[in-house]
Image (cartoon, rainbow, N blue to C red; front, side, top):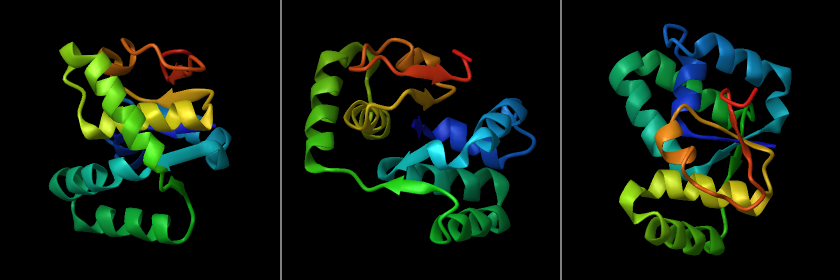
Length: 137
């Protein structure tokens, strides 16, 4: 299982993104392995609308609605763990999105997190030690 961060999803849908090819190749290997935490959805939508336009946003929403991605709606303990991670890594100034992605990856025992944010995810020491894709490919 691969838990996706915002940057990986943006790279996946933006053909002009410099990481698009490697993220798309990773996704195409096994799309069913990818899980999108609920917390990234508003951020992804905002960035898509702002930088890629309404047509791409509509396409992404339709993909979500028709099951092209598995959305993980979370559990209460995800927010509790996210708060713990935020406190533990206070110097990183973890926001809700990154801390929920990390907590979700831990709970689901993900083998990897798809992320381009190595400043944050490269610093975290998470249970199960998920790899960071594409860095660890």
